[in-house]
Image: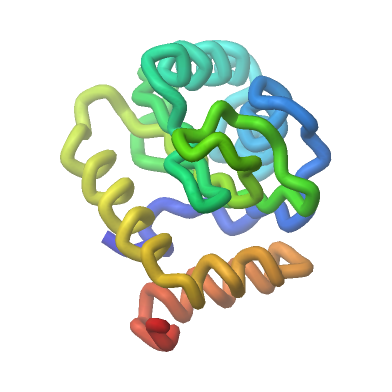
Length: 159
């Protein structure tokens, strides 16, 4: 699975304003609503579902990265977005460090395979230090989109 298969380009955010865990989830879900990928009336249900998932254990996986995700009945296909927090924020990350890079995923409840393939793709790319460094340097949503495209097409150097 590639980023192009599930990332909503219109929902990419290169300069998140949130200062806390709930706020960043809200900001990313709002971006999906603004992009037309999530219907406004379903927004709170998705936020609640993501926060419930976080209660099971933080999706802050370390190295400044979090991958909040949930399954929800309001979506009929896997959707996601990427957000960058310049200052970083506390996300109860496994390593105790602030998080700067967020990948939010929402998938249908009846498509666990897609959900797992997307998580695997994200995880694989995040092991590439060049990918993470370039994400942090992205100044615009277009910069993020180009980087995701390069990752999809194997055009990033792995260091």
